Image (cartoon, rainbow, N blue to C red; front, side):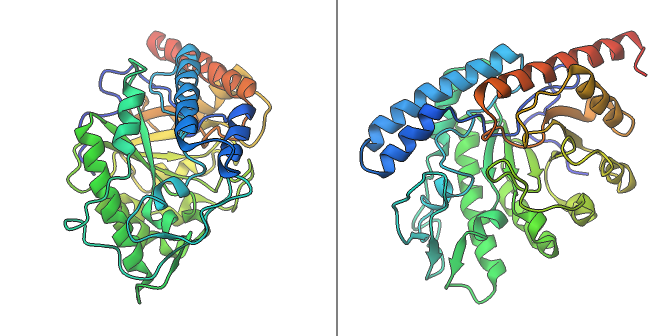
Length: 352
């Protein structure tokens, strides 16, 4: 078992801490303004200032919903890949224009990524974290798309072994994670949304995750889902492909989706002896329909049949990017209400 570093998620937090996975609902006006930027109707500086406003609003939404741990909503990012790849030295964006901001860039590497000491990268994530920290007094979770998923969007012309590209990207992310820790981050999360589509590469993905987390003194989460592109899953299946390889991941928390696809895979946690924290998805982000409080209570109680309360965090299945703002706010409020009911049952000894 990995020892928790930089404090655990459950440190000063209440039992069953509530959080988001990462991305937050993108309001329609921000959607349009991001497109305006790519059509040269809005400058990068003005877009940055607009994103400042959007992040402050997202933080306020999360605080008012009652979340224990908040995020910046990834609202500066076009999608789960481009914001990072476009900033990594040695990754070439073939065409920097887009017709729709959310689409992926066409990227490639034609030579091995530059030496990190000779060309130290700065992806700007520490500055993003510092902005967020200046506008909330809640604990912050900050997410990074993992090296395996990033590699799926890069045309590789530099490495004979494709795994070497994944490892090189992991080393860049490790350097950036050090910057984040120096800026005060205590909870970092690696997202691997592409891994479910390439289960045969799980060992490589775990190896790369351990490169990212090496010697970075924070608590680390790992989120693996089945994709959340335009509010649709990219793949279907079960989490058995993750085990037992994920047991070797140097992370403190594993966040998985269970609301949309059912909680049958919770048995894998018990069967394989995962004895660290589990972030259990109890809110379906593929639908605008707001779950009832009782639905979420039931999902939490089923998770508690397998995971001790001190090792459980409560979150949506995936990011809320594609959920309309009103529904996103309602889903988070309902999730917090459900957690309050379960916490009261735990405190009274009447959980059943």
